[in-house]
Image 1 (cartoon, one colour):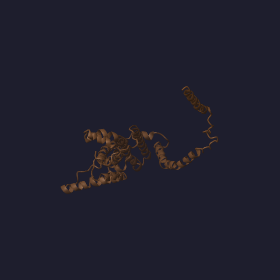
Image 2: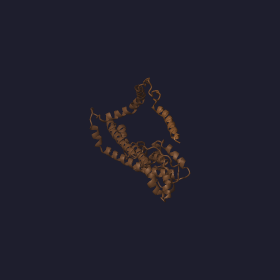
Image 3: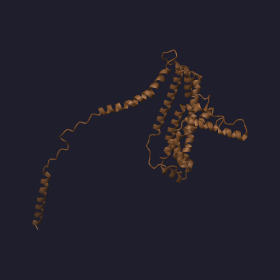
Image 4: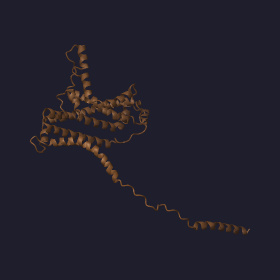
Length: 335
C-alpha cells in the first residue's frame, strides 16, 4: 500500500524527464526562408513605355491631321477679318446680325422639340416592345439596329413621298375628292423639319432603353404586380427609375445630333428654316463670307461641346456607368 504512491511518483518523474528534456532541447536549425542569392533584376519598364508611346504616335498623328488641324484652321480663320490681322471683330459682327440670332433660336427650339418628341415616342415604343408580347416584336427590335445605319436624307425623302405636296397622301385625297391639291403642305415648315427629326432620331433613344429594360430584374415587376399595382403604376414607380440613366443618355445624344443636323433641313426644302449648320453653308457657299462661316461654326462647336460635357456630368451623377445586373427581363416579358 505504501509502495504504490512511490511507484506512481517515480513513473511520473521518469515520464516527465524526457518531456522536459525534449522541451529544453534546442530544435534543429531550419533553413532560412530568405534565399541567400540576390534575385535577378527585373527589366526596366521604361522600354515598354517607350514602345507604347511609339505605337500611339501613328493614330495621334492621323487624328491631328484629319481633325485637329482643320479645326485649328477654322478657329484661326474666325479671328481673321477681311482686311487682315487678328481680332475679335468678326465675332462682334456675326453676333450682332439678326440672321445669326434667328438661326440660333431656330436651332435650339427645333433641337429641344425634336429631343422631347423622340424621348416620348421612344419611351412608349420601347415599353411596348420590351413588355407587351406581340408577334414580330423581336424582329422589330432587330430592325431598330438597322434603322440606326440609315442616312438622315433617306428618312426625309420617305416623308416627302408620303406627306409631300405631290406625295401619296395628297394624291389619294385629290383622287377621292377631285380637288386641285391636297391638304398636306407642312414639310416645308418648321413642323415638317421637327417631324423628320423626331422620326429619324427616335431609334437613338430606343436602343439604350431596350438595353436597360432587358437587364431589369423580373422579381421587382412580379412583386409589384402581386401587390395589386396597375401597369401604369409599375411603369412609373419601378420601370422609369431604372430607365432614367438610359433615357438621359439617349436624350443628350439626340440633342447634340439635332444641333448639328444639316441634311434633314436641306432635303425638306424648308427655305424659311435657317439653323446654324445651314447658316454656315449659306455664308461659305452662297455669300463667300468664309470668316463669318467660321465664326458660326465655332459657336456651333462650342455649343455642342458644352452639351456633351453636360451629358457626361448627368451620366456620372445618375450612375449611367454602372455595370449590368443579373436576372434581366427577357424580351417581351409581358409585365
